[in-house]
Amino acid sequence: DGGITQSPKYLFRKEGQNVTLSCEQNLNHDAMYWYRQDPGQGLRLIYYSQIVNDFQKGDIAEGYSVSREKKESFPLTVTSAQKNPTAFYLCATTPGTGFPNYEQYFGPGTRLTVT
Amino acid sequence: EDKVVQSPLSLVVHEGDTVTLNCSYEVTNFRSLLWYKQEKKAPTFLFMLTSSGIEKKSGRLSSILDKKELFSILNITATQTGDSAVYLCAVRGGATNKLIFGTGTLLAVQP
Image: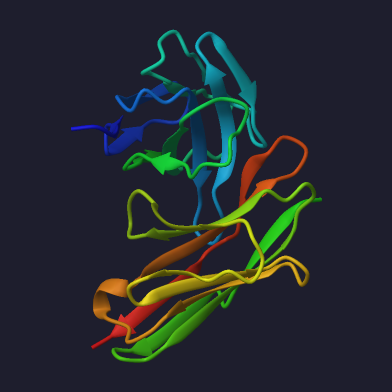
C-alpha cells in the first residue's frame, strides 16, 4: 500500500515546546516538501529536500527545522521560535529531482494546535 | 513577485448546477498549472495543464489554460454534494520552479 503517512493526525502542545511532525513515504520519490496551510491562505512552502542529506529553505522557514537522513523520511520540527505555529501541516513528494514537471502527492496532514 | 489568484473565494450552489472556478497567475518561467481538490485532508490531484487551449477532462470536471491571458478555469457540470471541497490552483515556475499556490475556492454544493 504505497503512499505518504503523516503522524499524528492531531497534535496539541504548550507554547514554548518544540514539536516534531513525522512524514514517511514508500513511493520511492526523491523530493519531499513541507507546507503550512492557514485559513484563507494558500499552501506556503516551509522546507524542501530533493535528495538525502540535503534540504533548502522555502518561503517561511523561520522557526522550523528539518532533516533528511533517509529517502523515506522528512521530519519537521516546529521550534519555540515559530511565532504562530498553530496550523495545518502538509507533507508532499514528487518523483525525480530538480523540480520536474510532475504533480505533487500529498500526505493526510497534521493539525497542530499550540496554546 | 510571483502570485496566483483564485476567484471566487467561496461559492454556494445547488446540486445539478454548473460552476466555473477561476485561476489567474503572474509567474515568471511558467512550466505548468495544476488543479487540486481538498476535502479537509490531503489535496488530491485533478489536472496538470501545460499547453494553451487544450482541454483536460475527467468525468464532469474539465479545465483549460490560456497562456496568453494567464488564466485557467475549472468547470464542474451537474454538481453533486460530493463536489463540496476547496479547489486549489498551483503554478509551477518562478526562479526555483516550485509550486506557487492560490488561496483556493471553497465550493459548497447544497442538496
